[in-house]
Image 1 (spheres, one colour):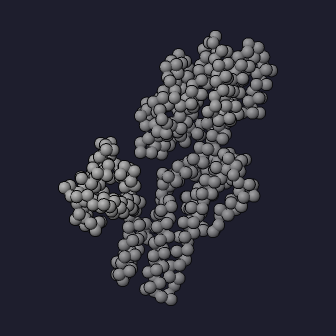
Image 2 (cartoon, helix red, strand yellow):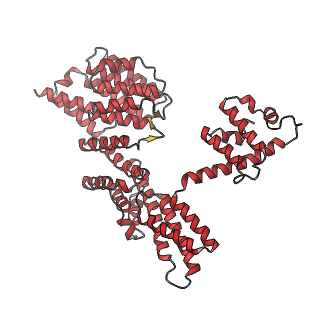
Image 3 (cartoon, rainbow, N blue to C red):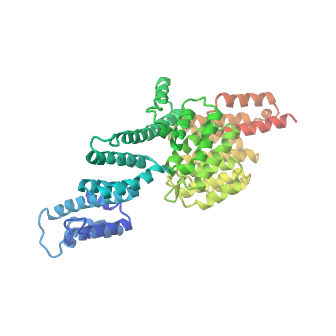
Length: 484
């Protein structure tokens, strides 16, 4: 029975949910078979077996003896119990999700519907009066709030059409406006997401993008577009609409994002925030954008939006570390790494990930021996670590002017060229880095400004190379020295 749907579903429950399900099964309000001990006995036995990782106790015969002790075997009796219990477990899941996703306004709305159907109109009026106060304060609204807002107006229409027949608009105008706000909030959300993707990987033709931007103002719901979220969507679309957005548009978007943060839910704020972060990444060669990017990432960390259940993704962890080190925010980065050493998810080897970032820290703080020691005492299993470690080792050997640097560059080039698991675009970037390093370390390069300029021009014309910013920094430093 270990492959049964019931066992698989119960295997996802944590300890608190396990106890809540047992209570649910025993409740006369929730289950028609609450007086029967068999569903409780079955679920309790499955939980016990799963918690003890005892698959042998999940064999059909063992379960039957536990749930029906001392009774003769009856064909299909256990299967029927499994089937009935599975239906009840699904009801429990629905109950749990409803309890998690409902909030006071939705609960009041459902009560209003109950009293309307009962004809208790005074109670209904009182509830709609409470809901009107909630509707006037639209801070931190998202999909569910706009949805409930429309359902409330729709409920008022149903109510007024029964009580006030042929008098006024029966709340139809307000219902229509609430529907428009719900539509716009969702339409603009997905429009911005699509435009943001288009910035990274073009998926829209110029005509399609132009039409999408033009349609983003329809319907012309003045109240929605005058709200903080509506105005932010309009500025986000202007910012994302093309490749040549002005810096002024972007700065205005960032100003409004900071100004209206308290009006937005954390989810929606992160949505807008990601647009700003992606814009900074695309313009990272500009120092102004590097400063903004670090501020945004630091703010995400300190305000908790970087974390899910106290954990931070491996990719975001590394981005925060790398950008912070590039901005020379060494103390803050060190504290961030130490505080989140055990909070990294999204990597099969989080400790290796942490150690690699420690090596990166030692490298940026010019403690090259410590960085090299971390690299040489680590056995990276994930390929990305192996690639990045070889790149860092070459940079360290360059900084300490090691005699073995040329041979390490040659070995790295062979490794990158032969490695079959590297995507072609990354393989090209790594191999080009090795080839570029060969020319960078030639003695005549450091004393020849013309040669340095040619190398810098090559990086500008084709920036698809690993460690672009570090290479440019080394060349610019060479250029200054060659002029002395």
